[in-house]
Image 1 (tube, helix red, strand yellow):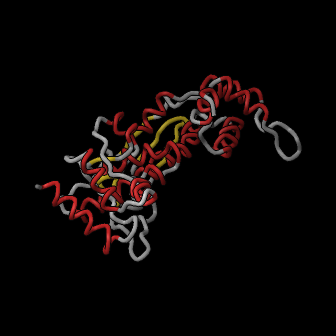
Image 2 (tube, rainbow, N blue to C red):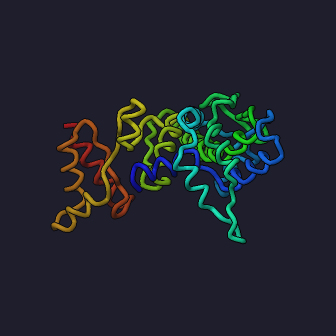
Image 3 (spheres, one colour):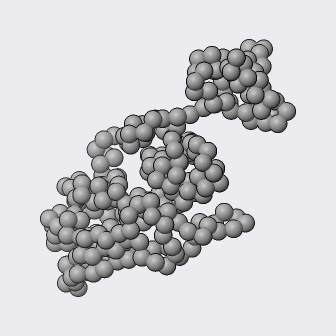
Amino acid sequence: MNADQRAIAEGFLFTDLYQLTMAQVYYRLGVHEQAAEFDHYFRSYPDYGKHQAGYAVNAGLEWLLDWMQETHVRDADVDYLRTLTGAAGKRLFADDFLRWLRTNGDFSGLSVTAIPEGRIVHRNVPITMIVGPLAMAQVLETSLLNRLNYPTLIATKASRVHEAGRGRPVLEFGMRRGPERGTDAGTRAALIGGADFSSNVGASAVLGVPAKGTHAHSLIQLFLAKGGGEIDAFRAYAEVFPDDCLLLVDTIDTIESGIPNAIAVFEELRR
């Protein structure tokens, strides 16, 4: 995806098609610019299998507001919408609607009232309230849910890990399992929820926090492939980073190998 394509995919068209088809219906009815209010809330707490969380931590608001301020309909957006057809082969969007959308397609007319990020929020209670012209408030729905729900989920989990840690440092390592560039939102949300640091170097730089991390299994596998052992890998890492030595103990056997070898290396560092 090149820069122009990304601008389209992540811009005003970052929404579901039905939001735009409904906007055209509102336009035909003449109610597209009438004031409306949309309330954003959730119905159930995060489910961890054996139990549910008893709360959630709000996150994602700042980046949503940034996106709203920067986003507007562009010629390329209208050109794409003009190509869409229905089952009978007729165009989905009429020219007069597209002209209106090109002129009025932004979120500057919407007001946002929301609970701040980092606050505890509960189910069935409005978190974000959007007021403004009906059509634009409707189009915003998908992006709002996308940009608030996932970060809130991650912030809630980070808060629970922080509480379970009882003051111990918490590091976020979710980048390799996150949804492409959306992982940056997850990193930010984890820091809001209680993580102290992240392994995500780029996001840490943007957010102004030091990146922290350990090593991967591949470091130990390298030493094994060369005829060495896990403890040799630990010693090599500790030699290069004696003051920032975090060792991954579950490559071979956590109890029988990883932890004993890590203890041995840390004792060597103390001498």
